[in-house]
Length: 135
Image 1 (cartoon, rainbow, N blue to C red):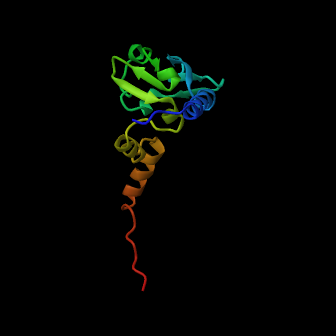
Image 2: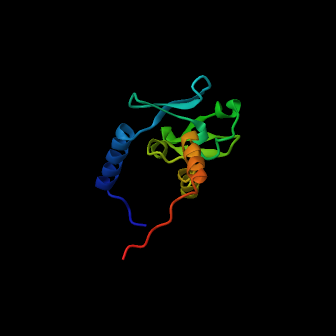
Image 3: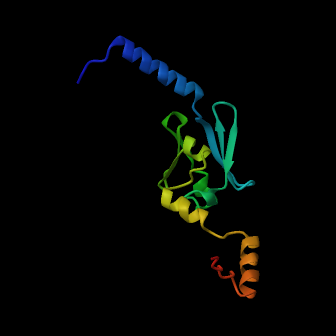
């Protein structure tokens, strides 16, 4: 393995310091039972909260299990030991609440009562109209 030069080491340390200063990291995390949200206080003073039902592995967790959230990796991750669930803080901030397959399933769900009512009304009218061929 090639030896690192002092210049390369200094550059790496500078990148690490910049990341520690600028990257979103958790200063604290907790489950707020009143709000029904995981609340993450960031090191930059911002607060981020999300409902656990959105997050893969937390959907069916009890309030006691949700309250066991730990901060990992200098604030870059959240961990629930008893649930064996981990999330990155940057991923959560980007709206990534699970694996690609999990997120795809969530996006395709008709979960709102308005969507369900519209589907029932459309079905009562005979469903979606057939496409007409244009020549």
